[in-house]
Length: 174
Image 1 (cartoon, rainbow, N blue to C red):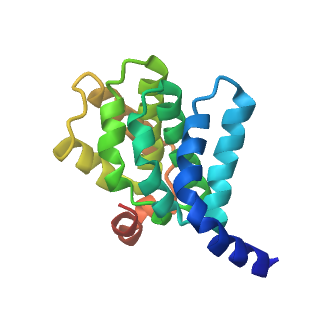
Image 2 (image 1 turned 90 degrees about the vertical axis):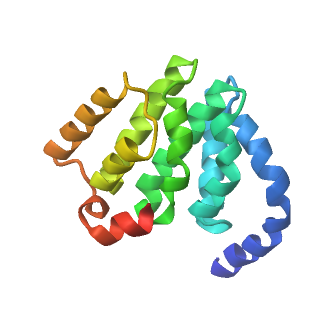
């Protein structure tokens, strides 16, 4: 089995440049089943072919895709990746500006997903994310108090992951 996975890794690489944009477009499909399968394929590719960090480098255009559902699903993919692969597998500092921009998206579902994605990131990265959001990024003034309150709630209820508590987890992951 290991041999097959390693073989797939090398044999599939030439197709990534055509497969990932097509899968990204499927994230915006009107059918739930199609979107779920696209998410599963992205997850399988992260498990066997590309590192999560490399995958999100290729998925950056999805955060500004013309279809709002694609933007929403890209953030859902990030949330799932953080949960399944840990905070150290993705450099979120490169993605945070895109997510912050989506807090002002014209689509309400995308705005809500951006908010929830930042909360999920906070669970993994802790106070470093809070500091970055207040100092480096232009979070919409109307969203910042609610976001900080939600961060406090997450911290106070003990929903933080160990990577948020350790300095090395924050530095490596961000």
